[in-house]
Amino acid sequence: MNRPGFFELLWTYVSRQYPRIINATIQHIQISGTALLLTLVFCIPLGIYITRKEKIAPYVIAAANVFQTIPSLALLGFLIFILGIGNKNAITALFLYAMLPVLQNTYLGIRNVEKSVIQAARGMGMTDMQILFKVEMPLATPVIIGGIRVASVWIIGTAALAAAIGGGGLGQLIFSGLASIRNEVIVAGAVPATLLALFADGGLKALASYLEPQRRAHRLARKARRIEGVDLSADTDDDPSEKEPPDGET
Amino acid sequence: MVDFESVTKQYPDGTVAVDKLNLTIEKGKIVVLIGPSGCGKTTTLKMVNRLEEPSRGVIRMGGQNILKMNPVDLRRNIGYVIQDTGLMPHLTVTENIATVPNLLRWKKERVKARVEELLHMAGLDPKLYRYRLPAQMSGGQRQRIGVLRALAAEPEVVLMDEPFGALDPITRDRLQGELKEIQNTLQRTIIFVTHDIDEALKLGDQIVLMRDGRVEQIGSPEDLQQNPANAFVESFIGEDRLAQITPEAGIDALVEDAPLILKASSGPEKALERMERVGRETAQVVGEDGLWKGMVWLNDIKNAERYGKPIASTYRTKRKLRIEDARIREAATLLAASSEPIPVVDASGRLRGIVTDAGFARMTIARLTRGRHQKESA
View (cartoon, rainbow over the protein chains, first blue to last red):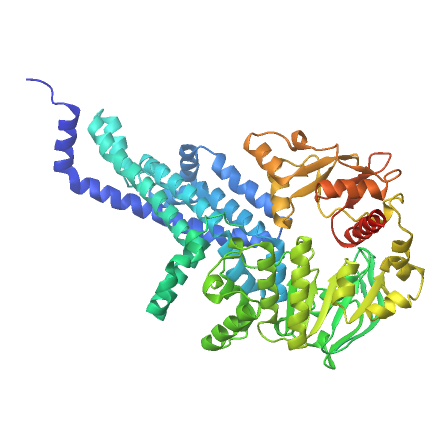
């Protein structure tokens, strides 16, 4: 009898073990999601803070850079001494590992907001908080989301290593596949992990484009037309925002 | 309306920007602050809405000491227009104009009606412009929106910091006319900073000529032209110089500060960013040694960035004037061929400034060419 082919093996494995794959995927999402959330909650405020303290900014970013430079597996190893094995260790490592892009992009995004815009905002009587939330944050959003995209892909990819220190997630499948030299098991873990990363990246990309000022202005115009009814529908074709080529954000 | 009582502004490094300034700005007038760069005109303006705090002295608005008011409330009651417009690039025209009314929590309907009213006043069809973004408009339109935004909450006092300085001469002229018209109906108190004497003479009900943080003369445009208080005023107004200027005169009088100077060491990205921020098509590049390297064009730098070349590859060095021996005739010829600014260097190769197709230079050159035409036709 012939040895069964790879796809046959994969099919058998998936059809029998799909609850395990689904479980591992959910765990993977939990681990990466927690790590990403931690990164955002910590790094966005920190990034904003260091735009106000230009002197310490290079040091903070350098510190985040150090964590990012340590190979992820080594970082997990170090953390065993502090946090032991398991998901807590993995989440901490992922958080440290993904700090840099979010921190750096928040910092750069806010710092690169045109000074004249901020001066005008202040001159019109916006408070510091209003300047932050109505001017700086919206203008830095595309850059910040760019950082989150990088961070989320790193986290989801690296989260597979969590299994190496006794954590859960799709890494378990990959590692057990490696240990038992069963390619179908490796693939059953690797493919969902890849898809997760692609989905996260694509979703964030779509979010960024949804938030683009151009698109938003478009939506506002459309909404106004709907509310104001037919009398304006006649000039749909005249709407300049639809004809104008997107000549770039400023 | 606004009174300065021996106001001094001294920076921590010891520079005195404004020196014991006494000035009364009348209600309903356009008062133009003018003077050479560094004379303290912008600092004076910014002290009114407390973007700068005076070191000594008192500023009153409508009799009240503004230093005792909450700066945020104060600013919401003062219109503010700046050169780079400072429009929020992520917000629509409507939202930009409505900024201050929204900060003051006006009702939605009132804000909406006010925005429509203002757009109509500026001759911008609300249907077309309501949902545009600043990036989808020309420089002139953007600055119109900037002015409307300042007027939105009907402030008694409006501050304008070189609002038309970045516009091309034709647009600038048109906007100056529009501002005059608006002012005829609205009668606000406008404090207007400029370095362009043409603009000051055209717009000002009153002109405050400053130098080194002090007032040299205050008066109507006619006063300044007919009874200049001293030689500085006379030369600044340029009446006297204008009469003496011939095509063979030196170009000193035409030279202005270069508005955008890049370092030779900066890469194309940095250069692009700065040029786009200031909205200039051209810039001058100066090396670490202080020597002029050349003039660069925005488009050339874009190409350089695309192909990864240094900005040095885009220097243009042929079109320039030497301050020691260039004649106004040459400047006029160069400007007639292309209206872009001409860099001015000295014998040692340092950048001295630029000659542009605007302000005093335009006036002078127009006068000279007109004179020539008359001779030719005679």
